[in-house]
Length: 376
Image 1 (tube, rainbow, N blue to C red):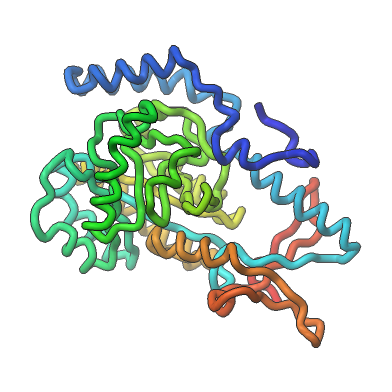
Image 2 (cartoon, rainbow, N blue to C red):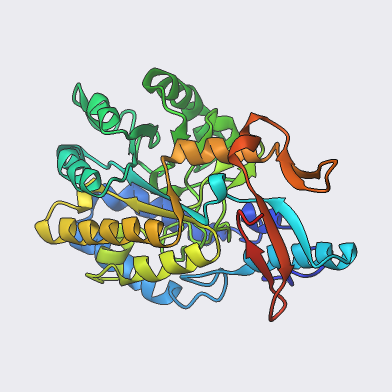
């Protein structure tokens, strides 16, 4: 399942598109039955079932949790081959993030119901205090969205995204269900002026996502053994599914952390964020306002945002809206490094080149390469 990332025939798409994950029909049937019966289950029973499932899944060998380094190792192997082929001490490439930033961070919210909508002002106020912005994903027809909700979110500098039509676990059940939802998905994206999508319960099918008709999707975790559709894309960087930009969820979800793993702490978020920043990745936190109802939970969220703002300052991170990160990643795909008449390396290819910087890879230790973002 986990192939040698240095092998010449290594195919990253095999992992990005989760082709390694053979779908167990028996497990799929259990998942369908769970979502069919979920509305009839007491909340306590739902959590108990998820906790029993999590205790087994936490020991999954691949993708490793909480950190899976496979595609980082692949990138280092690819750059090392370029170094060896060039015979140079270092080779250039287009930096991952604009203005030479070392990593990127985004915050997204999936709104599950009326309690979550009512809690939006309190969550926005916490983000405002730390100078951070976020994306708010709403279901098209699962609950009423009061007039003025989108305006409140956008006036705070945030964006609105689509969290599916219904939160019933059926969108990716089969091709017929997916196709029957597409017209409404396209309608709400247009009506709301939204460019981003997240699937309810992060159900997904990499071969279908490009049909959503939006700029980006955020339904793939890098690694997550706890969700009903376990697995992950193994990437801590954005990537393309055809012309769709995928923004992976790289931190454990709040519901999983606090309800399923039963941890009243933000230590896992902080530890993973440090690892992501050190590897120049994307820190994406998915938090539900529906699970931030108590003062204690809001205080934990407040503490993490304080930490995240400090991490961005300390490690030169770029905090942005998801749509801005997706736009940058699409622009970056058109860029390349070129040597000018004076022998200087520069980034060329589109107007976005003015925001890009030349990054360098040189030999490092333990089969890795040393990456210098934005170094001239």
